[in-house]
Length: 489
Ligand SMILES: [Cu+2]
Image (cartoon, rainbow, N blue to C red; front, top):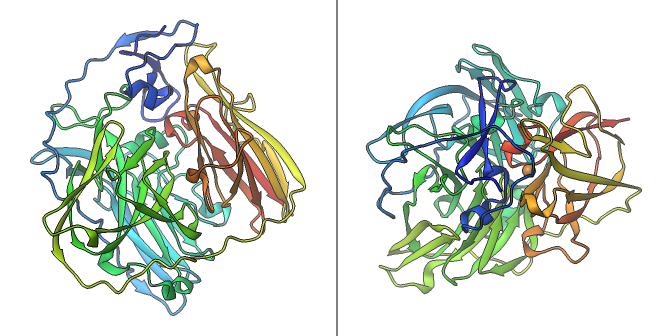
């Protein structure tokens, strides 16, 4: 059995130096619950890592900011042009403490891009870091050369333009680094931001909008006594929960309805969220609106998933405080501080899902670790990622079913999840039974607990070329748990 306080050293190949990985390869919720996971039977090089965490900030003492919205520097009649530096920045994550981070334009959360369905966006990123980086629009339907392929990076000092056509329906997307081997560290250190697609076809629904439509990025961090982010720690050490980059903040709300766009940008954590029994009316998942709102009292969001909810604070008197909690503690608190008029509504019908065309190809996708060597290697169908190899070839226009399995033995207790670039898919079934409420709607990322499986269906309609699919516990994709599909004509 591995000592949970020991770490595996994963050396060398990763750009930027040694990458530390840990028992965080394992199921974070099991680790957080104090169950000692059973380690692999093979010996690894182990050593103690002693980190003195920063003193905990008292809960609900810091306000939650809303990430600033980036303005285009030029708006053509047909396209919006943006510029964004990728640069180091010192950011006050904990009150009075400067934390060195890697950022999009100085923000931790990066600035929000507000796009519109049917109107392309062009963003030129300039890499002011001392190492290569890139940008992937998670959930975006884009050409391969604009997808942030893991090997398609921006050299230090270089610039790169990404074109996003926004031909898809309204949705909460996000942009983040995807540079091969360094994606986990880069995202953990701050290379993430919201990309919201506003869809005029949805305006007539009357959902809460404007200041009452709030993106909330949830993640975790371990910050040491000097204010530095610590990589590769145990999951139960990475336990400072951040909402929009602040520790367990409060957010002042009016006694009315709000739309919250929740994103889990952690590189490993699964959030299990509740409002202490208060109803969260789920209206959307990864790829946009659900057919109808679904009342929830608990919602799981694995790394990279999005869930949109409407919460009605009008049932609470001014002065009420409603805590959003996770299994390890509070995430943030909503403080009802004023009344407000509210002409928003949540119709009983939102937006129908597209019909599922018949599938003509079925594939099996198995995620696992190879622990036979000195360091764990992430595998899909027995192979680590090779950017020169097309693991799957898909004829354009085909609809496929993928049976995706967490194939690690139960004793590894290793949770995964699964993300496909290019497409939004649908979850047909989970473990042979019906999908769960966490699988609803148009999805691009799904949770894969130990030994579990999902059946997905996707249609590859137009773009040709090579795209990635991978575990979105980015510590795992950085170890090779990634494959490549090639859509051909
Ligand atoms: Cu994984």
